[in-house]
Image (cartoon, rainbow, N blue to C red):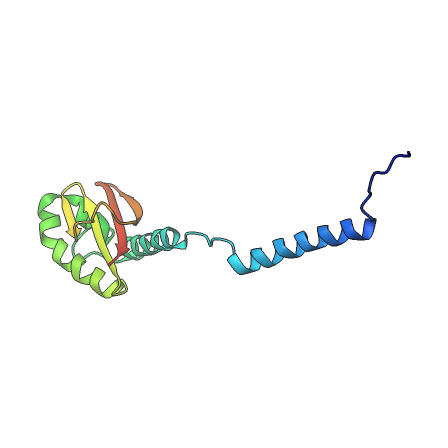
Length: 136
């Protein structure tokens, strides 16, 4: 008796591989791929833009910028923090909450520890001013 092994024909193998390939492509389109986390990046952009705008605004009194004036001293912070709070309310979209921190105090809301946020820090001659924003 001779060797009686069965062999698959080439067209059958090609058809099987084709079905697997088509299934893989259809699955990719049907399930999709996860999108990037753009929320954190967007919050960072909001924080940087806010810090840039504030660092370029003229002060109410003698310092170079609004943020420099805010960081100058505790008395200057006490005098200016309410104006900054009103300015941030007008500057930022309604769906964002904010916090501006200096050595002398904090303007804005208390940030919950469980939320994603963006931040930007502006150095001034009196210390750093950090802007944080997060979604309401």
